[in-house]
Image: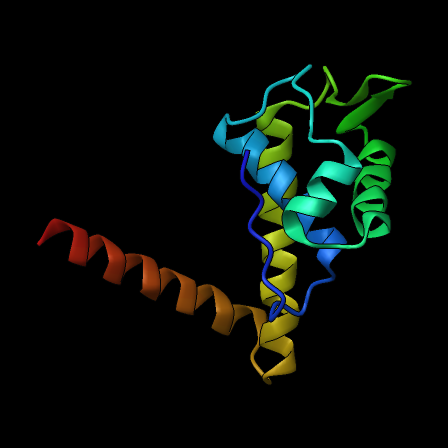
Length: 128
């Protein structure tokens, strides 16, 4: 599994790691009972402080997405379903978009219309 972390992103790194795990669940790259990389391994791969990865894993555990087997590692929980994670992911993306829109003086209706316009333009481009 590949984790894409963007240091220019305003979101904290541990949140980006959490979002990557959720995205992998939604996309089917991770399934219940699949292991996650160890904290040390992921920290080394991403060149991060292990505490950052540990924080992401703790939050995912608190949210019921993963669980820890002592001495074996961190695994995707049985109750972490793609549908539930998809809904959580959609809600988080919408919340971030709304916060960003408000920061730029746009209303929720402005954002919704812009998304509809962008989707229509994408559909038109795909049809051509």
